[in-house]
Image 1 (cartoon, one colour):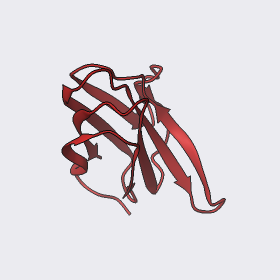
Image 2 (spheres, rainbow, N blue to C red; image 1 turned 90 degrees about the vertical axis):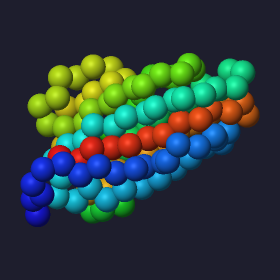
Image 3 (spheres, helix red, strand yellow; image 1 turned 90 degrees about the horizontal axis):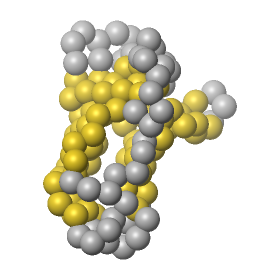
Length: 122
């Protein structure tokens, strides 16, 4: 199945969070994505780490597509996953987009961060 154009997905709406967040989105028919993490407020020293994982339905396994660098300040960060992407550690991956992607945001301590995650599928 092929889609025309782009489709924007709110993975996690803007909110204050202190614990691990995990969200799956279906990406069937799309070949790539750009992901945006917008951290708008922090309390003390939270450190967030975004991991994007693919799901292989044949093997019933989850594998890492891209593990982002730690985010410890108010920032706007972009990540890319698509075939032909220039590979940059913790920022972009030259990989085919699977039918399902799992987003995980790990938090190193109980300090709060207000952030959102959006994805543009293409």
